[in-house]
Image (cartoon, rainbow, N blue to C red; front, side):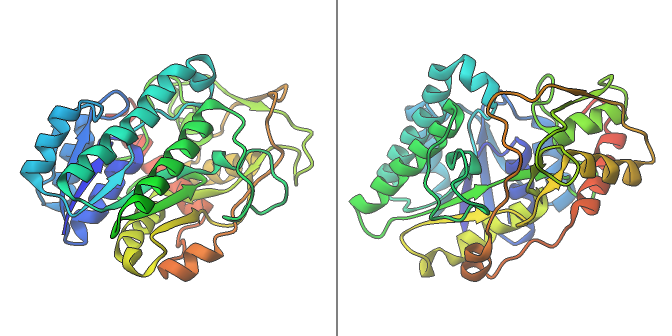
Amino acid sequence: MRVLVTGGAGYIGSHTCLELLEAGYEVFTLDNLDNGHIAAIERVQHITGCELGFAQLDIRDEKKLKKVFADFKPEAVMHFAGLKSVSQSVAEPLLYYDVNVGSTISLLKAMSYAECNNIVFSSSATVYGLPKYLPYDESHPTCPVNPYGRTKLFAEEIINDWVIAQNPRIGTVLRYFNPVGAHFSGQIGEEPCGIPNNLMPFIAQVAVGRQDYLKIFGNNFDTLDGTGSRDYIHVVDLAKAHIKALESQFRLKPFQILNIGRGKGITVMELIEAFEKASGVSIKYKFVNSREGDLPAFWANTSLAEKELNWSPRFDINQMCKDTWYWQSNNINGY
């Protein structure tokens, strides 16, 4: 099967391209390299020994996108391309609507033109907003509290409408929680552009001396140790879930939403302790005031994904930290 991957030079996209190639798929990826790295494409090819087709392209360029579809003739699409910083989305909401929503519309237009009817979409648990109950399941009300989350929810709804408009279209939405870790080879991993927005890469950069210390936002939450608790999933488990979703599409609902996580929370301090154990490095940190809107804890109910995809996460937080450290210590300055 030929699979077109948008955002394949990014963190999750590159790991998914690798897993697709190793599973025998023919893969072509598009990335404008705003958040991605051409070295990730090269390293995926080196690890797998397989060709990974690539074009540097903004998928909002409908003319060029149609040509890719005409040349590659994909049978399915995995859509990772987009911006993902919550804080940046608050400061620049129009940019996020233009990129995240606009690119999805452009992609679906190209798919319609090429009669490519299957899409797996990279969504986020941010669509849920403040918890009415925990763990979040797929029936939980959606009320995102920032523009990033709203762009993901709007994209989901657009895909749903696209699926409904014409048979036999299929759209599978994976709402995932906090991807961390790296490929076991240590050759590809998470390398944010600029200062990391997410906890794990920040910890890793403190460990190798790229950041002086970690700010922990709040230590008086109603959690095990007072620090915020989140659901972390290994990026390789996440990548494999995308392949399972692709393989399962024809027996799922035409439009299916699935949570992807480990189904348990890990606090900031637990994550630091696990990383220190994996790396042998002491992580410097300081407690600062919690941020407005920060939730004490949230985690996923993943039972539907486990049932429908015959998938379950394999790797625990210790393996996530071990693989992150192997990546970062071998790539101190990233790609």
